Amino acid sequence: MATLAQALSILGFLAPLIIFLIKRQSRFVSFHALQALLWHITYLVLVMVVMMVFVAVFAFTLMSQVTNSQGHSAPPGAFPAVFLIFPFIWLVFAAAGICNLVLAVVYAVKAGQGEWANYPVFGKWARKLLKMAPA
Image (cartoon, helix red, strand yellow):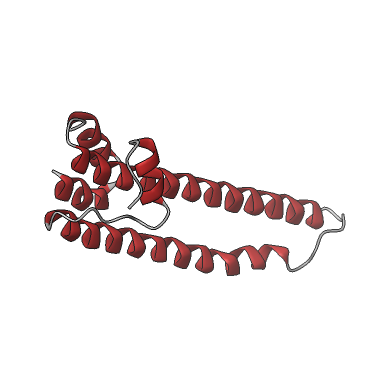
């Protein structure tokens, strides 16, 4: 079940959450499912923040161009700059997706071998939440 929680984390946070809630009696399964769950919650929050910032910058830039066309002053190169930032944001999301895939595969293999492998940062958090001794 720990391997399944890690492997299915490729699809999002729902599978690790369900496995975490169902297999609470197994500390090993709970530990691996909670790590995947913590990673995905953090990932989801970061994605939402980046998207809100991008939409806000895009909206303000668009509004400044509308006021600029009506004769008010606005930075002339701001609107094209938003479209230059978009590929950078897309690359960050692609890198985060690859990171998600690598974490899922590596830790699914480790869980399948019975290893109590810690995610960087999230392993320590999971141990604290489960009241386990540090590794």
